[in-house]
Amino acid sequence: MIAADVLEHFQDLSFPVSVIKRWLKNDGRLYTSLPTENWIYTSLRKVFGVQKPEDHYHTGYEVERYLQSNGFKPIRKKFVPLVIICFLYS
Image 1 (cartoon, rainbow, N blue to C red):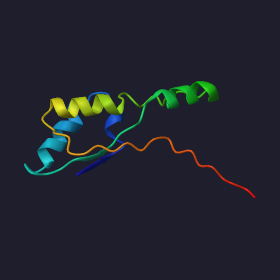
Image 2: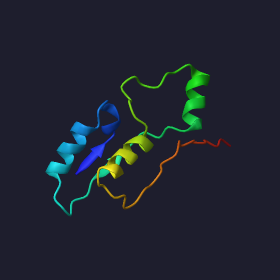
Image 3: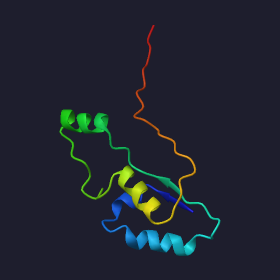
Image 4: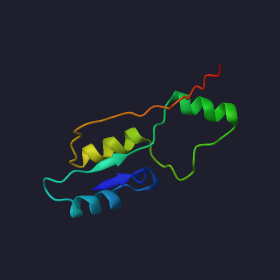
């Protein structure tokens, strides 16, 4: 089952997590994609005057902790940091 960029939008995580647990087989896997909130994003928001989206109730870390406290065991974690693309001109 995939929950891509969705769980942080629920103010109360108990409902979506209970539904996921009910739908997931005993040996099933849940793949998540969660927001990356770190000092880089916080700093860039301040520099550009952009506010964190109002419908992001939880950070990725909070969602992970909630899932683990409800019986989910992390298998693998991968961070995709802010990508800076550099163009070289000759």
